[in-house]
Image 1 (tube, rainbow, N blue to C red):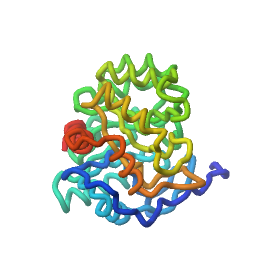
Image 2 (image 1 turned 180 degrees about the vertical axis):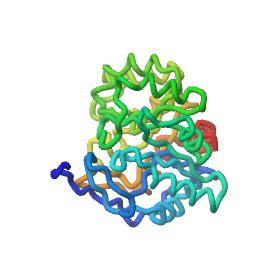
Image 3 (image 1 turned 120 degrees about the vertical axis):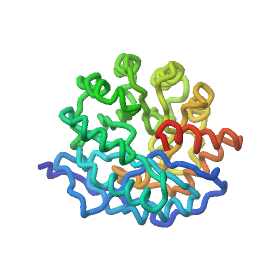
Image 4 (image 1 turned 90 degrees about the horizontal axis):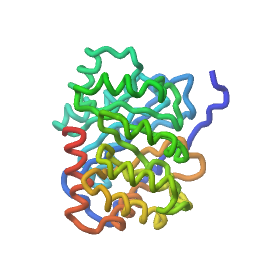
Length: 294
């Protein structure tokens, strides 16, 4: 047991209505739910306060988001109960409202994978930034990719930004689609000409990677709006791969200890990055609806 596990901040419990109206059918492609009724992994890197499905519904009602993709957080390891319950509750009330990305071990059975797929799961998350209870290592990526090859799933990666150069051979050899969240943790202060960000652009050009322009607060110098330093990165990614860009809140912004954003400000930042309505619809609706098979 890790006795040094920190309690992280809650999200801003009072989301502001954004300045823009998102397109109908907009999808938040990166959220978590935390509820004390689910067992935490003893290997976790942080302990979050509860941020429940009811809280998420209130957030999305405020922001104008209609659909959601749950991403398995590291604190639950391979126990995907929280996100599966969230998916099934939302889809039970409104058809095709939710999808998800799970964490598994290599001994997951084909029957379990098929059951996940039937419930709306569309990928497997690999987190090397804050691994927690997630067991699959970099040396096992080819094996898990082979397991999901026939499911029309993808692998979702989260990793320390400085690792991108070392990870490029793995990424470019993948036979299944992949997604990356939070600008691949490339710091905005380094600029778009930095080697790490240039490698990210090259990866996007190759056509097998989908990028979530989520977590602007995590890569911005200030951690607070207006996130102007993130805008050049967002626009550079959109320019090289406009059909493979998605957006997410990253609510409830776990593993943060000093300040958390107001999610209305994150929507406003997206509105500053993308002013064309047809492009907004592509990023918020069309691309994620296809990628996650809504």
